[in-house]
Length: 266
Image (cartoon, rainbow, N blue to C red):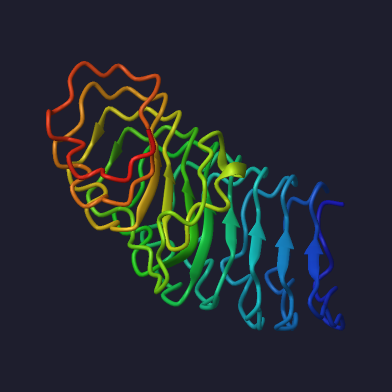
């Protein structure tokens, strides 16, 4: 099956359901494929197909107010439409574009999701060497949040790339952490953000890379090419629990770099 007929789901009432189209040979999708799907649809699974692109209006004219999972990983999309999420403005659990061969993301890719509350953004195992400065601008991350960018080709992390996690119940000691992979990060502290940057080509982290992420609880920057770190890089990361700097070429570290990390799990 390489495509689907236009309007195939028009008459379906997918009440509290999941739409699983994974592990087919889909190459294209009609731009109205999700039109009229009900507000109760919980997840759309398109992973392990052969999609090379998505129509930029694919989510238009659909009321997916309870959509919590969108998985389009394991496809062949090197680029994504600028306005892919233009009509999705509600709470979301996770978005996965892993293992697609993505070369770049559009400027302000998630900007339209001002009221989006993403639990997980998985962009791992792609070919991203650069991320737009405001790619996460206006996104509201809440509760157990993970940004997974491991196994790309990122060479530098720019200032203010990562957003603040918003929560009224932040408790950095609410869970025990197991820094052995993304599957073990799903309970990482109410209101905290985990950033996974392992296995990239990082040679530099800007001193303000994490300045605006007050609820940062885990950073994995293993298997990169940094030789030093800025002294003030963790200045406000007072809730940081796990910091993975393994398999580096570190030669020196400033004497005061860890001075504010009172909660670091040793």
